[in-house]
Length: 164
Image (cartoon, rainbow, N blue to C red):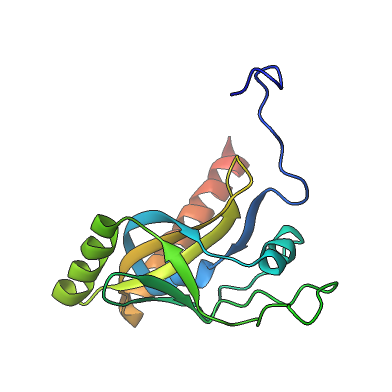
């Protein structure tokens, strides 16, 4: 915290908090570990994110030798952008430590796991971050069991409200 602003945190203008969430990933994958990653973005991409426009539905993380890239994430073009506007679904480099990348790569090679983006958000300092998860795919039976358990929890809570 700075002495100039009296110890107050600087508030980011525009949207703060969650921009886009990939809820389907939590349904399709058993997430075992999560890591916060930074993104290399152009100016018009940040402006588009500040308007709350992004889609992670078909996105995935690709691990190359010493780099990680976010593929198929849809950040629409900025409406007031000019000829230097970004492409909507271009690959975006993720900022991770080398140890984190090697840990993810080893898990993918060893256990057949997958790295999926879970949430795109602005942190407290107004910097765009991506929460990625390391998970294994769920089978249909696992999904059904999960739905049954969720339905039972919902019914149980409703019965408790009615009785109590």
